[in-house]
Length: 358
Image 1 (cartoon, rainbow, N blue to C red):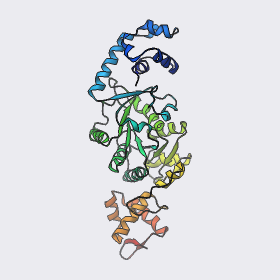
Image 2 (cartoon, one colour):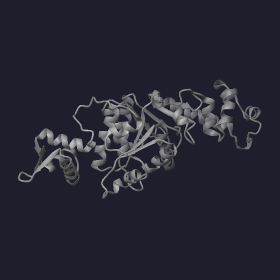
Image 3 (cartoon, rainbow, N blue to C red):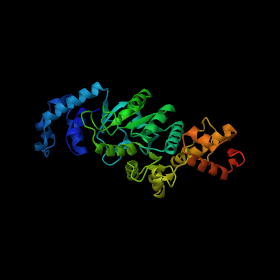
Image 4 (cartoon, rainbow, N blue to C red):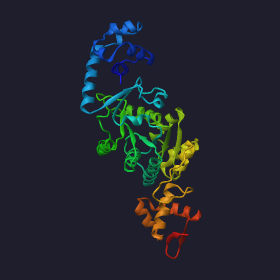
């Protein structure tokens, strides 16, 4: 942790090399003694007209006070523990403020999971199911703490005993959305992590949310998009992931659903079509952890496996009952049941109007 690097990064738009040169020549305990002359002696070309060093020192003091009050710490790009994977991206954050388990920044298996703020029951289901499987296979879930898929991803990770990293678009002391206050507390209780590049005195600006998307993909080795419309902000994160050379996974959706236009488009553009954890593990070259509670089939998607399990456990079952049990639309359930019938897993009893195991 370098106070000098924090100070220069927050208040001076200077090249990385200049920040490092100054921080190598000024000790942290000398920070509040430095003046424009000190900087000029180390960087002769430094433009003093843009410097208001005494004012900046006062602001830094206030940031320190807010950090202390909220138990927030920070890490700079010059620190050994700053994640190299993030430093590899264009325009990486020079300072990261954090609350929680900072060791997760360097956790090897990190995957971003993002999607619609207003997911369908299908989107909620596949997100919960895939995150559960990712946790069982030792992944840490990275997402943006927004409503919808982001929040579901964080919650599912915690509920399944895993770890998650929440990348805020706001300062950490300004929880957004406010409805996620309980989730905020659960993240910390699970020994997970909350990060932001915005210090505590900054306002919550819309532009910050788009900026944080590069951090979600930058921290992750891959990005999973579970549901997204044509103009979803999720696609901004996917574009960052493409630029950064990350694996991109997308869950296919109903071609008649506006909520699936974005994910289906990603697949057409080359993203890995993902219907089960095995698709993700194959791309990474990882072997699957088979310690899974329910019996599943590799050729079935998470949703197909879940509906098959409903029929299997009941012996025979009406589509309406399955829809109610899984909070899905009857149309989606019937569509999956027909697929299971075609694949030979179940059969339809027309007389009883129900489905049963073959």
